[in-house]
Length: 59
Length: 246
Image (cartoon, rainbow over all chains, first blue to last red; front, side, top):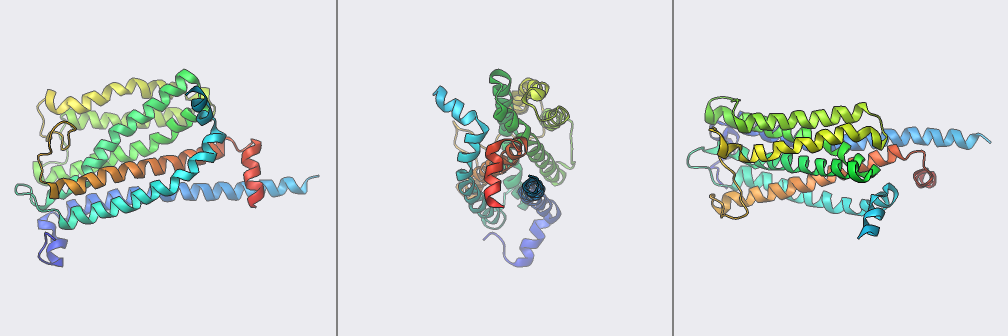
């Protein structure tokens, strides 16, 4: 551990805004892109389900 | 060899086989990235010149490396799509573009956040930064052209040409720190030389670099599989897959 205390870590040697800003942005985009594909897949599956049901009803 | 190429080039075959890779890629990402972040933020020693600000390196350098290699992969997919007219390669190029654009944006923004405390400015118009900005525009250009052209493979041709021509930018980014005067420091990693950093500093960086590659292939594959589903929605095999599920 290269910090003396929790407060020391949060202060990040005076660079807290830059360091945590950079990490926060990176993690947000990294998680966001994974979530985005999941949402797109689920919506597409719902549409397809409706289509397939409608087809089944037709003779 | 050619049989292998043709099998994997078929969206149906690729779709059926590639799903098995997903848990490994997800596992690699979820193991290495949190490890790298905790290690880099908490345990790596502070830099004797830059203090704690250098910790931005653990997100900036992997993003910058990935930005360039994801461009090379996108252009390679574009080239295959141009030469062999493979639908799958076209879809691979299209789905790599937005991910690459985001990664390049992260490299630029984290670089700016590092530049402000160290250089005193968020941005300078030097060769390294400018050529990386051009990389972002290339990704955006390929994406825009590809989206405008519609889902057929032939529609992707203009975008593929742009992607391949844009490859010229990669050596410019790489050598920009040697060719022109710059504030930017030279490469952190090299295959031929030992790193200038002590192991406590570069080990978390290595974890992050491998981790972001895992992440990239994970997201790329997820997107590519969704793209295949959407493009092949009228074909029998994809309907059957879903007919059984619903």
